[in-house]
Length: 289
Image (cartoon, rainbow, N blue to C red; front, side, top):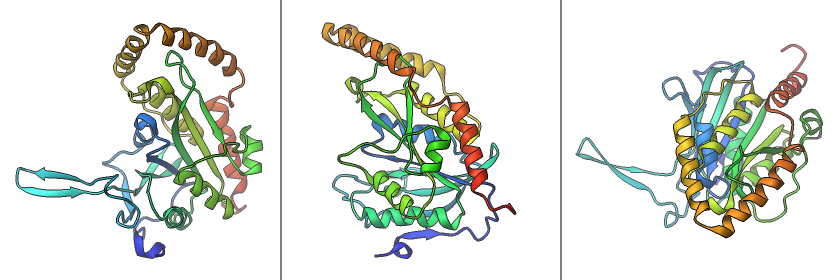
């Protein structure tokens, strides 16, 4: 099985893209509470985006785990909804065009899946790839979640003040993808937000807001604010869970103290990071661009 067997791609009518960057979020192990996919999907305007590629789900999933959905349209037509991995081009988002992949982390054939993603990135001339995730961490729900980042590209790390990846252990397909991009010398950044591990089964609109805003600043695009009432509603629900557990209340206070200490050593501000990212991409372009 190779890329052409599973990737449907057509950008013949698209024309040249302006400083494109590929933005990726996949539901699965590193998308706690659908935080990452929700943050990325907010960059996509369905009425203005163009689908240029899709990955055939059949070879990549164990359908006893990721089951398709059956829907009835207009009371008559039964439609099966399979896991989707769709590449959409969003033109004129800030100073650039975005290529957005939102999908479902595959169970099988990760190498081929990563090759599909890198193939689309190369065919569309993407200058960099940004992967976005959300993982369970020892962080308090009472603070704005910190967004951290890493890259294996030395020049990009020096430019943005990011660290090289230090995590060792089980990984997802994004980890495989990052390795594939590194092998092709494609600049790639991984951004992730921490989710309180004691509230993993809840929604986290404050984390979505933090992640979306940070990615927007990095890419130099507009960040549309989310609904403030949802943030407040979920904050109240989180507070209720904690206040009924004395041990958990004490634990959250300890996390707050540690958070305040670590916040001073966080990665650069979103504005600074965005300016440096744009400068790095500009320096990588041929002189005649």
